[in-house]
Length: 310
Image (cartoon, rainbow, N blue to C red; front, side, top):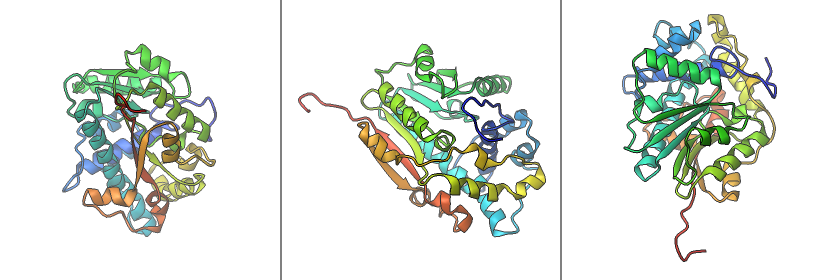
């Protein structure tokens, strides 16, 4: 089903299915011989979500088809690509809190479990923002699994198209405290103007010393959606019924680094292949993954203005 301005979802429908897909990818990546990540609650969360295709993947009861180059590329997305992306954001939060950020905000958190599996410095508060159904499911399921948060944890159940800054502030967020923000796997699910508004809100809420990690996918998005559908075509034979391209919002976008610099951030982008190389991995050499190869990992810092400087 195509997106609308007021669509909603849980973890078995619409955009929510992608959260389940990424959690299944983290479960797969955690079982690699030399894993980049360790997410012990990924598979149980996927299992509780009840999407059979991803449950079988997450539990190791099914292998993805890999007979053709296209199928091998799809498998690589769910292992190597997601493993590196997850590790990049893990390291971002670890580094940002080590240098003084005492609030972490995970936007569109889905089934991300960083609030439960990362080691956070004393005094750090972790906020998670997502749809009410998604927040309720994850919070309840992890409590039932006996998996406590590893830092003070404040879930914020609100749609990012609504007044999420007010909801975040009402949950105790302090805009005068340096904050680490993540927008992982999010931007293509927002219209171009909503992407800009998201960064405007983050900027308004960010004290000096705050940090942001996100991604940039150049171009209007049509090519990325088409490739996503190609990668998932054979999965439909195993019960995967989502047309991924219908979840993306097309349209030209302002490059993320340019927009953030215009709002006063020190921002830089690293090509995806460079991020892979930093973890001792080589980005898969596949034409089917060309659109992903062209994307970049973005980090930004809100400068600290020192006394006497203008």
